[in-house]
Image 1 (spheres, protein in one colour):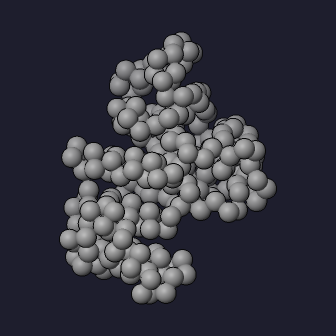
Image 2 (tube, protein in one colour):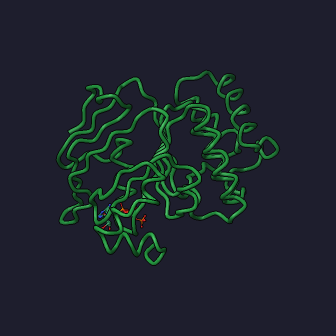
Length: 240
Ligand SMILES: Nc1ncnc2c1ncn2[C@@H]1O[C@H](COP(=O)(O)OP(=O)(O)OP(=O)(O)O)[C@@H](O)[C@H]1O
């Protein structure tokens, strides 16, 4: 069930959400509220449910049980691990998104140029997007999301396929977006990145939410390591 009713004191809220893929219980009993201005990292081992949770939050998957409450006025966008690029110029890849959102083509083009400048891709504006490097494509995907001026941006492991330099560039853009007031919810396997970017950490294990803490408390408090051996191994980097 999903609703238009406003979430309590936040942009978005999940209440007792289960998500099943046939016999696979990908999410179980998730309660989560996303407030404006937060930078929430979703972490957990492979298969713990991070991507599924992002898809439910963005409305791409409907909960099997439970509710998604969202404020209809909140604009949201999502960025995937490997961005999908249309076989046309970088400029058109951004402008088409704006055009589909209702802008006239001249305005869409203007907005796209601004977005490309924001991610320092002006020089490759006319290059075919598919010929760009992985890092450039991820920055282009960020420009495409940024141009739509979302209040809330979901990112599914946005730097996992990038080299360290490109990773830092994408992180810098995420930090800049957050500074501009965008709320970020991102899945990550990179604990250093989580410490650099997140204000809050949500830890998932086998589809259950085991911890939801401010970033400092998550990494410095003993609670989670004491309750879950898997979490202890994960935090030591022995589970990816
Ligand atoms: N479309 C699908 N059909 C069936 N099962 C799925 C589907 N998508 C995900 N699952 C299962 O749901 C569970 C959660 O998967 P999910 O992709 O959300 O985990 P994740 O934490 O994002 O993993 P990773 O870190 O590997 O990306 C896993 O058991 C996965 O196999």
